[in-house]
Length: 204
Image (cartoon, rainbow, N blue to C red; front, side, top):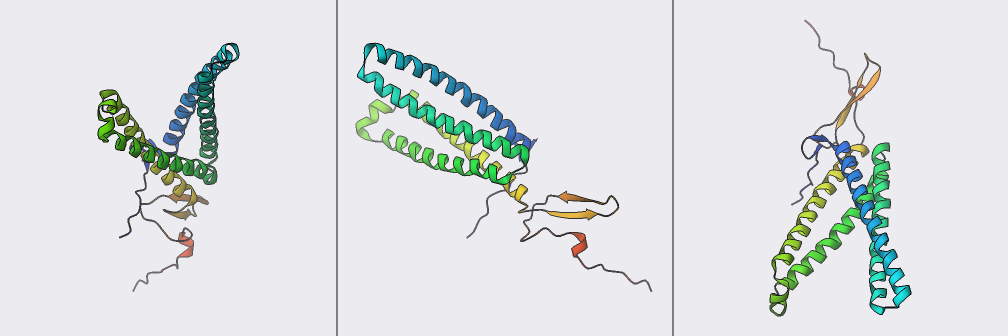
């Protein structure tokens, strides 16, 4: 049985969809930029310590932090792409960030499943089943739920910009085109009143 994904009209049930997504993107961009700045400072100190003391363990930390910083830079670049697409109402730019978030969600879900599986292995029962680990998994799961919600919001906005649902009509008196969004999805191009045959009611 086929089930369509829900189409959201507002962000957090109160904010207009596009403005809510842009606000979320700006907050995410600020947080990612601050985290990247912190990683760069830590990486600078690690490189300095390695150059001075030549500690092999420090090299592993440098490689790890470099990979994390690269991922953050990619995230920041795609977030900026989404913000530009949101302001320009460009569905193609927004779709790039949408697909990226789906890929990240799938990978994060696999990682979450692996961590939960490890928690129930008897060998690691005492080591990993602690309040710190359970709290970390709960926070990770909550972040996945938030990501799913915003992915649905992005999908709804992209569908709206691409004209995949809703209908429009022409206001001849004002000589302009008015657009109204509806709940039902219409196949093909949007229809206007001018496309429908005019019906004249005869008066006897």
